[in-house]
Length: 148
Image (cartoon, rainbow, N blue to C red; front, side, top):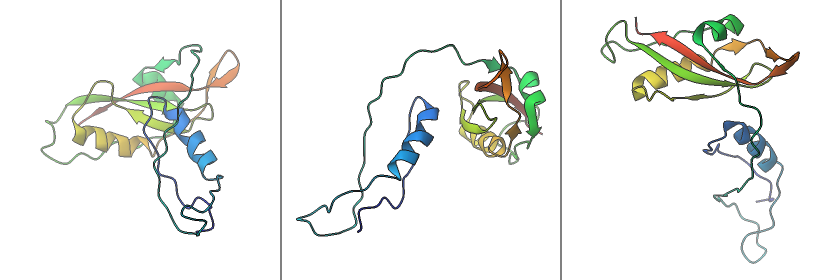
């Protein structure tokens, strides 16, 4: 009612790095009263247009290389019957310059149940920064899991 943003729900974007920045900025916004100057709570959907410039490609690390940067790993818990034992699947972790997981992608279109289990596990992972040309850089990591 005071015009301050109470909560922000993450949005979907082809560029997951934008989500955190946009949500942080939205939390600082303040709105004027919505109806005839009367303070009231409101909910809204906002759309943002942005221009992105193509920079150098983000490196994609293979499973073994990415696991060497991991300081904490959690393997997914997969319910019996979701996939046969020994099934191998790969998800892509999006990691920032500090080694923080920004998101998980599914470029190989693995089954939703496998993706959800892998996504939950990857959100518990921690990475050391990836150093490129002497400076920390963001990276993608293709992490493979095996159903046990």
